[in-house]
Image (cartoon, rainbow, N blue to C red):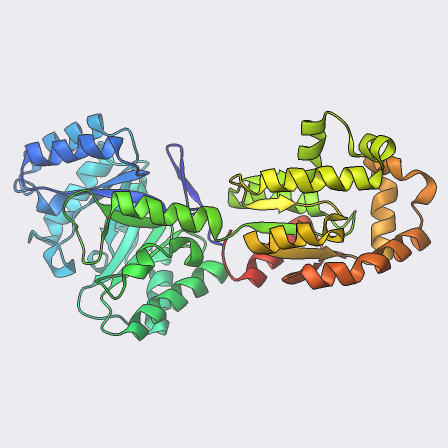
Length: 421
């Protein structure tokens, strides 16, 4: 997974793609009105498309509008001047383009500055100058006519990273559905394996619209949405964008961790939550909190049957809440009702370990004291055998935890599921 960057209090590169509202207009009044509106819209950040401003080639006028936008906007700001050869509205010299970017960075008019890769000619020294002022850098590459091959797209991502980008961005116009798939495949390839910075991958136009909502699937960190006018073909309005991304984020990737006690379900759930910015829940801990009793006491006073009744009741409640990772008790699969509930709601990951590993972990875990003197290898082996069929029947994927760190287990889960949590 590509590393994240933190801009103000916004972490880019983790979880749901960040929605960036586009502020563009020809007049100061229009621009400032949109900036005010962007503050109240359901977006995470704001991009000022300076090439649409009628006075942007007057450096003093540029400073004035930039200062006013900075004062208005409470969210992270991206400054973008798209030159005409890169699909922008205003023609200017490379000298003025770089001068304008330096003014933005030096005066901290924006948190992030977009730099066109074509303006660098393979030399990252200008990027270093900008970063010296404390801003983050997006290096971007656009083609409004065609989409390169997968190999070229991947090469471009690495080229931009090597030039010093904090975020790499590619936006291409597809002529066929295969072009869209090429971009998706290339982006998934580099984000899941190689790149060390967040990626923005966009296929433009109506054919490529799916990439604007597919970001969490391929780890595309930012999606751009229109307030009124769109700055690129295929952009979606902010209101619709938020709805679609929330549906995907909240429902598409609910992951249940099941397995015998001692396989690491709670530790893995905690690590997934920490590493990937997820809402997680441990069902046993939830039951203890709601019942004001430990699991051991429930077993002792109400028998296993009484505990299983409570387990099913609380599982139903939890499934109505917004948790992406849920760690379930070892015996959750003993009731068909429970199996049907979790099968309907998400992906079931079975964590396994050898009986010898389980016995050793349980002996070291003081919270397992309710098991009494039964923590021995033969007991573990027999109980695991009795539940093995039920576990394998319910599992969508099986992950062995023997001789692996928690982080290694998390990585294997993510890679096996085929998406970023």
